[in-house]
Image 1 (cartoon, one colour):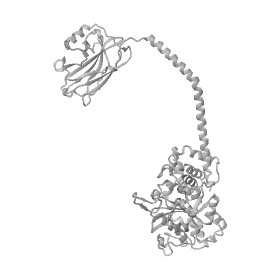
Image 2 (cartoon, one colour):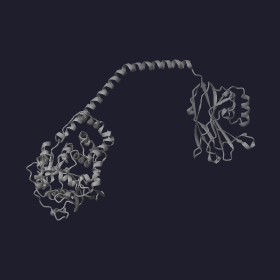
Image 3 (cartoon, one colour):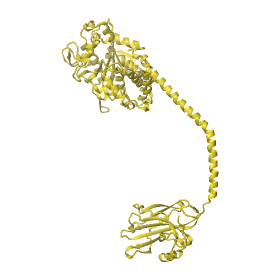
Image 4 (tube, one colour):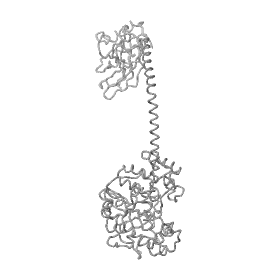
Length: 587
């Protein structure tokens, strides 16, 4: 730091006398802005001028009095140049000069006389705003003494004339009491050290105990999650809620979809309590699982198009697939057992549908998107009556079939409790059993227009629904055979084998990236999805080609399909438990 002296005090006084009338000077106690102009064309002569509203204002509150020696202090000051003065926006020079008061008058023009004054670094990046104002901050550090501190600003007008402005404030600078500072710091340091020592003694035990508690909580949570996964992996061994079916004869007679509660009150439900009983029901009769998309917020089928499509699909199976008992008579005992067919079943429909080799051969027709095969004549086409014409879905043409009482229907609106959410959740947990053990799985997706919301519902929108994807996964986990997709209009529909709809296999496991009317439903599905994933992981080496492709796609990007915000590490725990043989049974 430079220390000013008085060798040129007389020079400064002379300069001041030449540049400023003695009656107006901040050194005489006037709190005012002084201005000068320098005309370059006149050999750089500098003379006093009227400020004409231009001014520099020091924020005196930013400087304490007295100041402390050898400490940095910020001097804040504001510049205002009226538009009438036609100043260029950029200020060419801003800084702070500090003169010992014994020097006499302190002007901006002693910056090149370090023995008379010291100054802060020049700031040349300050720009006036649209109103002609600018705020500036300079930093000074002074030795002890009595000072006149001035804020100095230079600017150019549009004609290139240089203008200087300055304003002063008086401040004393106290010498630093280094010994007191040392003592003070020593005392403060001792107190801090004592506090730290006490904190270490008293707090270390708390920190260690808290750490142990957190570790214990983390381990307990991990243990609880392992128990949770182990429990849900066993859900396929028992029904959390009975499987509730309605006979097709009653379903057709009612003429529309009805709620679970109404069907229960009317005594129309067949309630099956055990997994073994579900298997038996699928052998002795035919259980058809209906998967469809609700086309209204509270009413799943407001115009009955799904109802008519369901009936036509079931009757197509009954009437077009069954022609004789010959196939069952030709099937050996081992094949019948593998097909879950009882030897004494004489139903023509049963005989025809349980002949797995013929079914698979017919379903595997090379044409993508073909109708189901008319098995007796080996021709491929739509499910139709014997004269080759498509059957109408009109209710008036629908008559009672002798197989209606052997056909049982599972459909969510009628088979799942609608009023009590707790019972609904239990039923959802049993979906893998309902869908997996049903004889047939029917996806119903006729194009339906909901004029209230201006949206068409069809197979494309079905595949975007989370609940629909979940039902497909629950079925495909057991088998992709005997799965049909009903598409087309009310009077022009067809059944497709699901293997001809590749889009279903691309999306069915992406439950948590699908659409839900209520996103809270996702939380209810976590355990069910963990169950499905665990069993699929268990069977990953024996999946058919369609399921293998889906499995590889999902396993390569598990975090996308099973978000951590919902699953945490449940998927990894499921894999660990399955690898360790946590469960071996399956439905």
